[in-house]
Image (cartoon, rainbow, N blue to C red; front, side):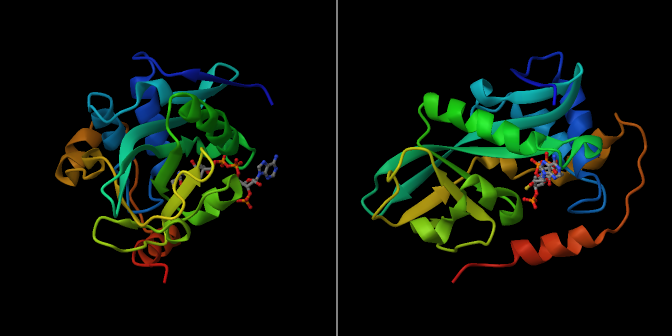
Length: 212
Ligand SMILES: CC(C)(COP(=O)(O)OP(=O)(O)OC[C@H]1O[C@@H](n2cnc3c(N)ncnc32)[C@H](O)[C@@H]1OP(=O)(O)O)[C@@H](O)C(=O)NCCC(=O)NCCS
């Protein structure tokens, strides 16, 4: 497969918004928010520029991943800066041929080299267990309010860094999106039909699920 990875640059920004809109449209809600989210990320101090990668196939952008700064704090008030990715997407025409997996594998090495000892995300475990991610509960990592969501997933890049503590995870405030602005932002793109899909019901079930 002729896939090339490279850092994104400002000529790619709108194309990556379009790509996210194609990949997420009607997946988790009728329409999607991710193209708007992406448009707000790059000027935020938590955005990690060194980890904003895309994948090209025959010169066409087919996948993108963006990372933000996050952190965990333990019972002794010790603090570790972690990396969080999202959104990650592959164009629907190129899904299930290994591109998403390859981009995760590629960027996790770079995250480690940039000093991040762990990656912590909210995502669907079906997509990430195969990459070594485990539930936050396995590492004693909860949300700030002490819960262990099903979708809170952890990958240690530095072995043992999270061992033997209770941690709370704090993600960037940039994910607390003001979704009122999405409809207005969406007018920049060609019209697309919003509809219900069963993946939206599964998503709702997932975000209401917690690990005991
Ligand atoms: C989720 C997503 C990023 C995964 O990327 P992807 O490139 O489609 O995923 P991959 O091809 O690397 O792996 C997906 C599956 O295809 C399989 N696969 C990989 N290469 C394959 C090949 N050549 N032939 C057949 N199957 C293959 C993998 O084994 C994997 O199977 P599994 O789910 O049973 O483990 C992508 O599908 C996507 O953008 N989805 C919509 C947006 C989204 O949900 N983003 C993530 C938010 S949590």
